[in-house]
Image (cartoon, rainbow, N blue to C red; front, top):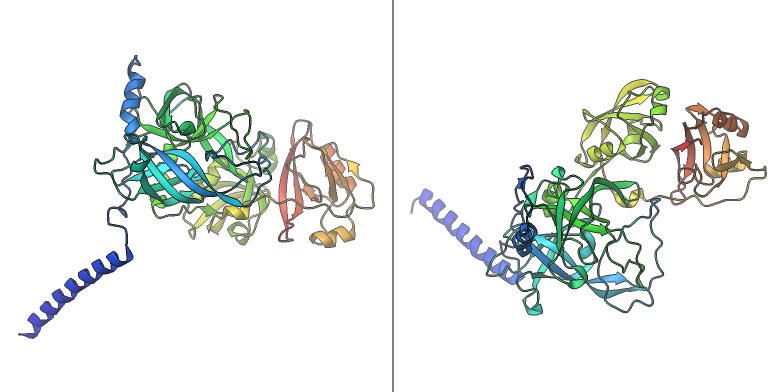
Length: 523
């Protein structure tokens, strides 16, 4: 045999042996078949205008068309329960923040216990990928899915596993392990950007474990800005189509039977169960995650994790009254209220900088900036244009990866009272003179600080913006160094205008101080 023929022969032999060994290893390790690891086929978005008459069969046809793609999800999960909670509870996310944006108070809890819950979802491709809410499958030990065709038969439930989750948008991607012989019917995607108040919608889900329940209503509002984490907001579709516990993860459909949202939250003032969650039903205020938002996240969910960019700043809107003082154009921009550790501080960004461009794109407002930064791949260096002291400049920042745990708000605990008498400022807060002891304890930069906040009136102008033990450094961009200077600067703010107050705030966990901008409207 020639040398060339030998090379070919052994090459083929090695390839054959590799395939056989791979098959043996896969069988021994019980690895999932290729169909289980298949790529998600994202449904095409139908952006054609919604039009046409509504008649007696319209909603019947939508239900008939869309129901086969809707699934019931049964989960066993580890969950903390209250002392009296010995019953099955549905995994349902109520409106998570009260009207003032403060998290609801948790109930007294025991050690985590294994509990059973139910939710909804919908199939998005023939490979068995299912979309639902993150809170439905969070901490899940087992996940079973019932198709609409066999939801009455527990023996026909299909095992599923989590492919990827995203807590911020409350979305999870699952995959059915063993596909049924009869195949699956995927849902169709509509264009959530087309929806407007007054548009008809239908919700299908598993409320109170009553599978494939259909409710009809209209879009009440779009772009509804709801707080989903400390300092983080997402836009939702608000609807009066009845959404009840167990509807979580089910589809919100347009008149063509296309998914335009994922039902996620309800706002209810009904009675609460033993776990502190609403046990009452829908009162006409439900919220769905726009499907366009979900569709854009699917490639990352398929990889198991959604990564977002972070600058390391806290931002707020720029009021019309402040624009002239700061030299900011008539529209757009986001004002920096605090600079934390991270890219912004490394690049030299300061409190009261107004960001007007991010990576070459104009910043419309603070929400727009959050969206632009979040969509930026961590590690990317981008130019950020800011207005500082009425002058424009460009800073180059290397975007970091967002970690929500780093953004939780902190409260500064009260220390010993100052010996001087507190003075009411008329802004819903009292201040007193800053002592050397305060300056050392709070690590205030040398030569700075006019007064220390001793008390904040609940629900007053300063409430939620200023904390006890904050130290006032400047008012309207002018440094202050005494209680009298602070009071004179605040008195000079016209009624109905915002006072821009820079304070020094210490994180009780890290004991590190940070300049923070508080904007308080003078009555």
